[in-house]
Amino acid sequence: MDLFHSWLVETPIAHRGYHSKNVPENSLGAFSKAIEKGYGIELDVQMIADGTLVVFHDESLARMTGNDGYLKYLHKEDLKALTLKGSKEHIPTFEEALSLIDGKVPIIVELKNYFKPGKLEQAVIDVLKKYKGEFAVQSFNPYSLAYIKEHAPNFIRGQLSGYFKGEKLSWLKKTLLRSMRFNKNVSEPHFINYQANTLPNRYVRKFKQLPLLAWVVTSKEEYLRVVKYCDNIVFEKFDPEI
Image (cartoon, rainbow, N blue to C red):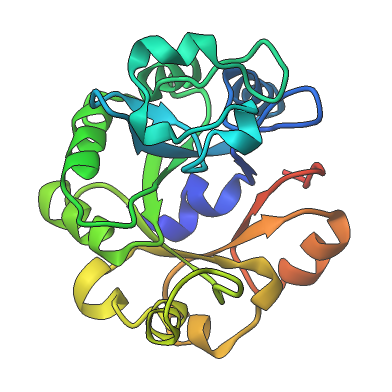
């Protein structure tokens, strides 16, 4: 497949679905809205205590549910007791999200794993091998992508990166991740998804042969600025042209 002529560079990607004040991010409602508008969908996948894959961005429950505690300690039966941002929406399982999307639009699945890869990645592989729609996987963790490369080499892989300002990482880790030092021998991505407000920069220039996405573009003004430097955008808070 020629990635430069695929959905990856042709269809704007709605960040955590097409969410708004009344439609929470990473919810079935946000995915339905993206489908309705014809946008691709980016969503975050994590594993909870009983091994269930869920679609949720944060480690903590506080921002999105108003509850104390951490996502990783939940069990599947806990999900329906938690509502997202005061709506009637609940934390969806990965399989619920895929069942709803059902190939109607392409998806980018972000693996939220900051530790040793294996359990999460394999579970995602097992689910996506049965999925009929177009998809790619991405991660900030190059070793998560290395696991995908080894165990599902036909999956499209994307290296997420940025400048990591304010992140609780050592100077060395920030430097290595920002410059995507692991791209060549570890993750070997098919595309790069880089922090929009840092583009253009010398780090992505080294990989100009790869499709470049920009995250997260939040206005038409930013879109018009960054579109000159990338092949596609991951967006929220406005409607880019298709």
